[in-house]
Amino acid sequence: PDSQYILSAYKKWGLETPKYLLGDFVFAVWDIPKKILFCARDQLGIKPFYYHLSPDYFIFSDDIKGVIAHPQVSKSLDDDAIANYYVHGILNNPEKTLFHNVSKLPPGHSFVISRDKAELQKYWDPTKSPTIKLSSFDEYSQNLCQLIRQSVEDRLRTAYPVASHLSGGLDSSGIAIIAARSLREKGEQLLAYN
Image (cartoon, rainbow, N blue to C red; front, side, top):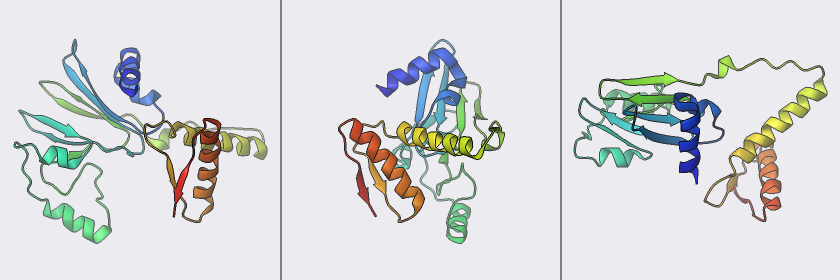
């Protein structure tokens, strides 16, 4: 199961673990010898991670309702965040939520929490990706196809039925075709909606 995979990865790579994971993930590992809680969120932030941090508590969940349900967390709304959301349609700060005392772990970040401190670390930055130099347009085309295929297949491993949103554009159609072919090889079916 995923939990064993994450623990094995953490035993091997420690705080560097998220750099080696592909796909959508969020996890928290209690490191008994070091007495730290290590949390991480996938590079694009597909899986959510909400938390409340105070001097006495660290409360976290993959659903904001799980955090605000705790009696130690105030449910007071953040008027500035709400105004920002209504003006821009999004929250410009990746750590903000609509609640004063609830934050989000930003995409591509990890969190190390100990008795003495809480340290947020950025482990992934798309602007620091390595430059790829190939010799021809065909090689670039083949490399791009392989990266897209691998990216889609990395996200098909799930305990739930896989579905695709078909918007009518080329990108969603191409992703759906790759996913459907890969799932068919496993005797599974892709569900689609538009």
